Length: 222
Image (cartoon, rainbow, N blue to C red; front, top):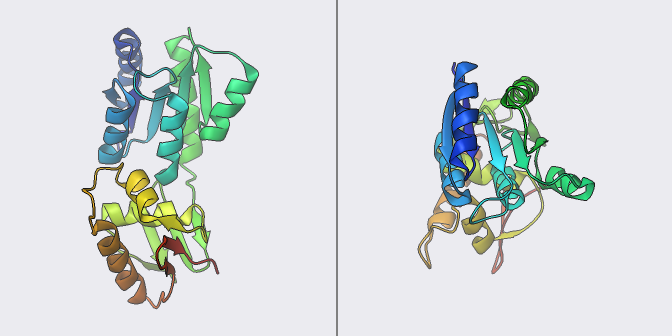
């Protein structure tokens, strides 16, 4: 299957050159010129890897990396004009898997893409008791039985599972999982939570999702 690379970069010349090299290497390429459209493309197309420019016109690249990492284990390679050690450390802590300092040779970037995709083939697994979530494969099981979740239910459960036990407010969930796009006083979060509970309950997964009255939701730790 053709692997998909998303480039989030506001410089059209860099996007054009990198896209050409990646397409020549056999990858499908998507591109976005700012952070918001990049997050939208990532949510809609679920790319296999993201190449992310640090200096975007709307958001700092590190913030985009943090938002991507909330719900996805997709490899992230950051392009940066900065070469300071402390900045590189901050990028890795934000969720980047690798970085490349500008100017760079496109062939080196393609080589780093190949390395990250090889690493990703092993796949991340989030395991909490009898619950297993495979973010890259977008597969979830409980007691060795598949939990058939909608795409947004899967994003929501993965978000909760990355910090089990932590209570998230509805506002946090709306902002991170729906990118703040829900109308005011929407009950969409509650509906999705109820649907997930029912699907887990069908597999004897009782009480996995906690409701903390007046605050929000949490995934129960074993």
